[in-house]
Amino acid sequence: MVSRLGRIAIETVRAISGVIKLFLEILYWIIFGPFKGKFPHRQSIFYQMVFVGLRSVLIVFFVTLFTGIVLAMQSAYQLQKMGAVLYIASLVAISLCRELSPVLTALVVAGRVGSAFAAELGTMKVSEQIEALDTMAIDPVRFLAVPRFVALFFMLPCLTVLGNISGIFGGFLVGTNSLNINADLYMQTTYKYLELRDINSGLIKSFVFAIIIALIGCYEGLNTKGGAEGVGKATTKSVVVSFILIILADCLLTAIFYFSKV
Amino acid sequence: MSQKQEVVISLKNVSKSFQGKKIINDVSFDIISGETFVIMGCSGSGKSTLLRLMTGAIRPDKGNIFIKGKDISRISSEELDEVKKGFGMLFQYSALLDSLTVEENIALPLKEHTKLADDIIKIIIKMKLSLVGLKGYEKHYPSQISGGMRKRVGLARAIALDPDIVFYDEPTSGLDPVVGGVIDKLVKDLSSKLLITSVVVTHDMQSVFNIADRVAMIHKGELVGLGTADEIKASANPYIQQFINGRPEGPIDFFKEDIGIIEALGL
Image 1 (tube, chains in turn brown, green):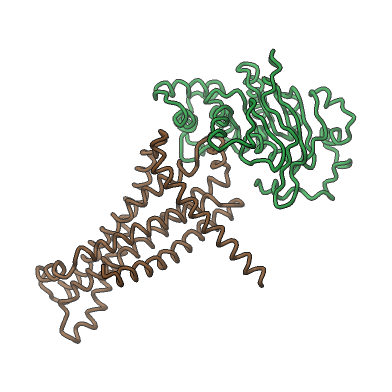
Image 2 (tube, rainbow over the protein chains, first blue to last red):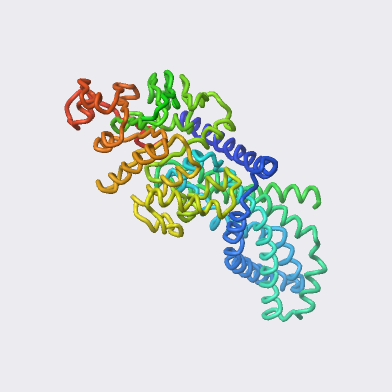
């Protein structure tokens, strides 16, 4: 029992230090790489941006749209009793921008993209492709992890903005159709109460989530061991760990924003 | 063998352990410029580990490995990268990048390490592909061609930067005898036409005597025999005789021996 706990502790410490090392290596290649004439691959960054961003648009759109609809209906249930149905507009907008859109988008992307990173890099690891890169004196972190990291870092906030808009649109649909709020009035109320800092705090969260998803996906992929089963394990683990870390980071960031009144 | 008897790779008392288990134990030998040097041994004997030590993928616990005079077990990773640019490697399962076409795979080291213009790179790719007999397959993906073809593309990639040393990890394993023979011929051609020093790890006996100038036999991480192909064939060493004749009885006892787990897992 004790030895098992010890082993888990050692594994955890090793994984954390591995992820931090990967993060530092990625930052090193992004910041100092260009001075050595080793630019990140523009072509693969764009390729990954399309995969991470463009291909996730539809799923992010639907997830946040329906969340907006559900949020509007659930709050109408309460607010109707107080005769404050109009405030659904601001409630939906603020809770989406500050909280739901960044988190849900990150979870969707962790499931779709983080797992794909782990599976792709894991397959490359077990089929000697990573070692081949290394033997050709091509750094796998620079060649594989940096484009994925950069792409995700820029695309996740974009997806979050899209999520904000489609979620507000979902609330708008409920408000104007079934609650009979005037469309102009709905949008006015939204603008009146939604402040830029609400959107910003959501975007700051999404930058942090992007770092988490990219690092965990790439770390699990690059450290895959033992054939097809290993790839499966790495993929599952990347999703599970990303989910937990996203919620944990969300909790911490919300606390920071709340107490610092951002 | 080439005219000048220059030592290009030199191992001195190299040892390596994984998780307390000795995989390579005090191995020393020299490889001479232009020769085809074959390392043979059973699965789990440590021969792949030995190859990884020579390519700098892992560093030895003890001893030194010199490649063209540079001790790769002691130098920084930047210096090691420079040494790596001077050799090519053919992997057991080719290890081509799945997401790139044949052409892009071969272009990869050229684009990474040279400032050559794209049209020059195109010409080099054509040249390397015709050298391995695969002209016209530029636009194919690795998944669209056969295992033997993938090996040849891997070989074209290994020689893309015109290295003077090429390492081969089980070049004929998993191929039919004819394709295996083709690969053997390519290995021989490369060393005779381009004067490349070849280091081949294999347990395919037919291949060994087809291509080898000199042969080293590894058993349980130790060097048990070293000599020219003919010397090895005529050797009275019981390990070598058992191995080249594939006899189940002899000093190499497969049932008592625990096969190196690390090696079996490919770590």
